[in-house]
Image 1 (cartoon, rainbow, N blue to C red):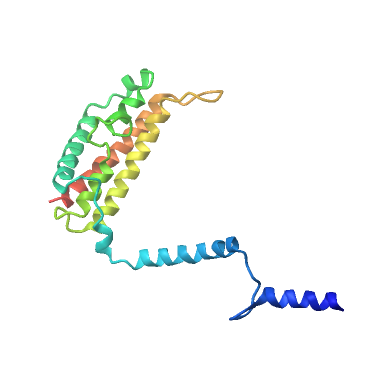
Image 2 (image 1 turned 30 degrees about the vertical axis):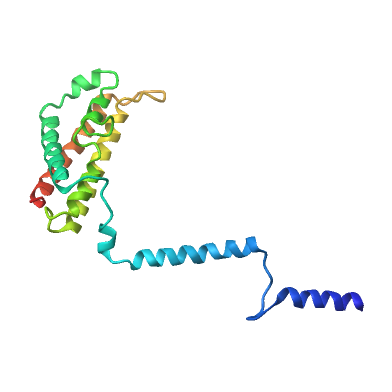
Length: 194
């Protein structure tokens, strides 16, 4: 009987709070339950910020003028890449796809395409672009084509598996098709940049 009374007393003490019955929690457990609440608060605050506050963040030191110059150079380099495309030569070379990747700025830092996404962000938020949303959507389309071209060029360097392998020239030609798509999208982008 005493034992039962002691157990009931401890149970009441463990579950009693000012808000009613609740199991008492260790500090660690309380912290773990607070983390989702804090994350939800942070997410809500981030969503509620005005759009201008998001755009106020610096674009990695790239000015609108330098971004515009970089895009002009990249656009010209894209035309040069297609004019001087050499599937046979690059397919015959070991690592020939790397030539394409270097020109696309995904390997090395010598191409005008190197960090072109940062230039796009700077242009999007500048006075050179009237419709930032349309510009952003078009640059995403451009970057998707660039990454597909890069992936295909990289695949031309790989020889894996057994059996009949896909020749490097097939991947290089598929990469060329993506670069042609990039050129078409680049024309749209050129029309958007004043």
